Length: 349
Image (cartoon, rainbow, N blue to C red):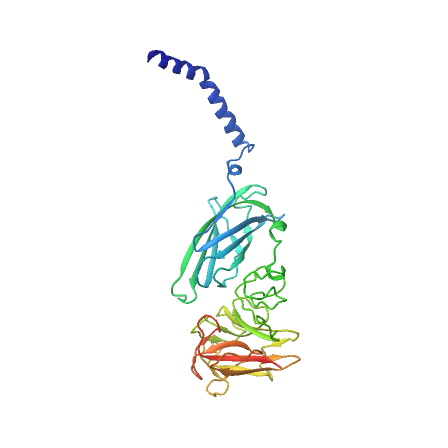
């Protein structure tokens, strides 16, 4: 035993200096940036079991302003409404972005791009070409449960900071793909989840052209509307209404016409779909009633918009504008989430 102990001691005495030298050399390489521990770890993007992360990119412009883009999937068996987004990091100045993704409806099993812009890459210590770790958080609620049942998830992104140009290569609304699998391809194909051909996210909309028909007029409810907003709603279901020029409510009842121009002006309108009890926080009534004095209006430039009420489905050449709970003193809802029985069906002739 003594001989073995002596041999071990002689080995350590002889070669300990070599171990020390190796450790010092590795430490020096790390200190001077020759070896970076972060380079040894693979890139990753993890959010939660409810929200799957397919991919992530951290971008940086030549003036230091950054972008974080995430490709996420709603793994839940029901649609949700995203309500807020945020970012952070472990750096002395946390990673933050001035523009967060648009909130709104996110369908079950749908893949969406979420983009944060105006990010403080320089202040947060993100370096072009090097890997960095940032955190994201998201708030949402299930559509059927309503906003009274909010949930939140947090995730971690570990990715190489690339140039902004390499991030902004995918524009869902003109990529010839049905990204949200609703039957319409891109803005040109009539997907109401696209606000324009350059919209990066084809999501949250419907497909009025599904099954043929090619409606010249179609309407939908969204937080994003670059077409014609007829009025606004406080929620997707059982909601109050307000006139379109106000901004107290996020949800817009939006209409788009193929080969025509629409307006919500109430100066000699084609149709007044609803009367409102006030400019905002309003109940609604059918245009056949005379209890309320505030109108919401819709007209077309070349053709004529007309609307009618039904408890059945809208016809093939009609689009559902919204649904209401009664003839007067009514609440409003969209035509998809939890619609009322009374539908407002409109068409362009």
